[in-house]
Image (cartoon, rainbow, N blue to C red; front, side, top):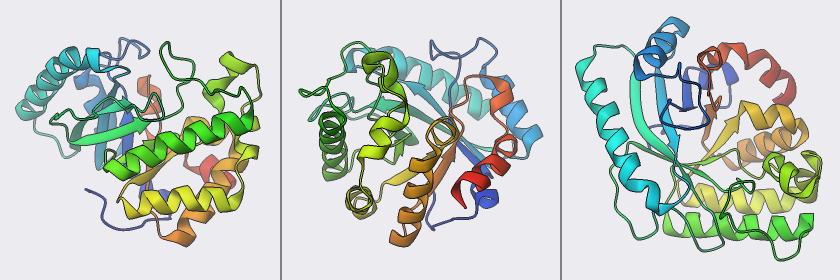
Length: 250
């Protein structure tokens, strides 16, 4: 992976924002053009960014590939001090199902979401309980790690996206994970050389879970990445979030 050492200082991690959506993601603002993103990243002093547009289903890959080619061409045409990764936020949408299973695709960065349960077609737990969704999430991640499919897990373990499906509070799923279970799944990520994202959106929505994952991961020696999940230009600058992250994680 492009991050080869374990970094646990938030200010150091904040030099990279590895979860930014362009306007090719339907949920992102139209201001999120390649040019605007790069200018904003340069102004923020970021050293590296990753553009990660959503791919929910394999049938979306043709359009995604075309968009990636356009972004790569724009990257080749500019002179910027910011290292720009053209990647995607791919989907682990079922226990044994993920976007690039048995599919070759050329991207710089494979970020995988496993908990977009609010998205149509996403597999739901047989038992509509926190334990049921924890079990399903565990199976999703174990498949990704076994196949070495992901560079980083996006907003891992967080139940924020379950709220519209179940009505639960965000912390409901997080509280269901025991420390030893978090350690077990993070160890499997470590062994598959998959990083663990510190996502500002979900860290703020479930700070207790974020803190637990940070300290357990630090103990295991896991590689963390930092991503703001930016859908707006104002959310690209990681420095806007570092003090709150330190308060939560340290």
